[in-house]
Amino acid sequence: MLNALQVFTTVVVGLMVGVEFSVAFIMNRILDALPEDSGQLGHAHGGRMLGTLMPFWYIGSLVLVAVWAVAGRHHHGAGLVVTAAGLLILSVVMSILLLVPINNRNKSWTPENRPADWKKQLQRWNRYHYLRVAVIIAAFTLLVAALA
Image (tube, rainbow, N blue to C red; front, side, top):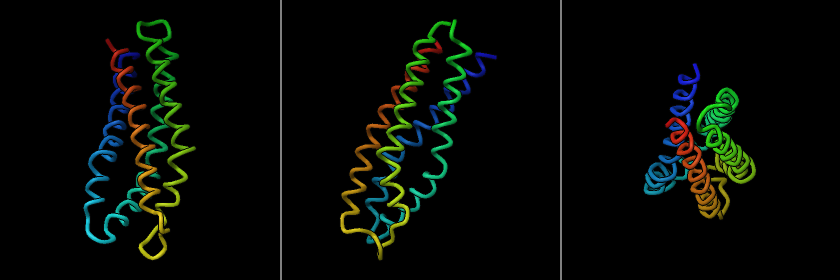
């Protein structure tokens, strides 16, 4: 049963990393290359859609890793799993304190109501997002190492 939990958790976290990596390095570049106001509208829609989904994914991933840490506390790699859980906690805290406030503003913007510094705010969100992606990649790497 522990093996199934380990594999399932690693897949769930790995998929989350893939989505966030894609947002950072693919989707944002595509949206930024769209003409006129399409990119900003795409960022707002993405903020609404992923802003609804990702909190459940982050918290669900953290819960799965915590269950793995408890269930596997006497097994090889337990320290790696606990460290991964700490990194996922950090990613949630980063999200709440740094990214969500910007996203909550962005998701309601239209070409008619967006602030003059909207691009600067999205750039700030991107910088924080890159850092968060690095944190969750590190957590995922630790989980993979704990499987060995």
